[in-house]
Amino acid sequence: MQRNRTRLKKDDKVKVLAGKDRGKIGKILKVDRKKERVLVENVNVIKRHTRPNAQNRQGGIVESEAAIHWSNVILLCGKCLQPTRIQVRSLEDDQKVRFCGKCNEMIDA
Image 1 (cartoon, rainbow, N blue to C red):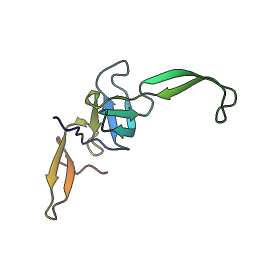
Image 2: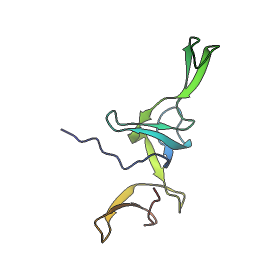
Image 3: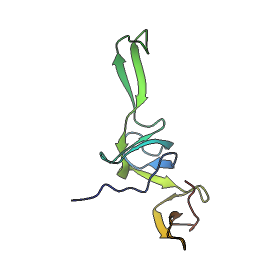
Image 4: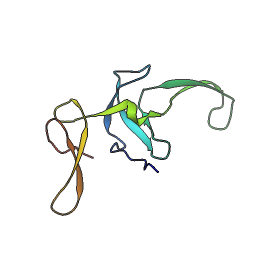
């Protein structure tokens, strides 16, 4: 059985690699590890028709983001501003830290 693993976290800046929003850059709002999906700000925006309710008294058409598969995004390094793969290294106190694959800088999280 394959374990659902990703090194992406909430508030990471990512670039979309595939789909109708290819090339867009956004911040991760939510990571769903069971379904292997991420919710990215202003990416994969859908329109949903809603009925009037307590939160939305008028109803109508509401735009919101839909989740995309996490293999379709890549992390942007904060230092070199390049799309990069993530390397994980252990520090001397047995704490795992993410590093940029291009500039070898630690990724803030």
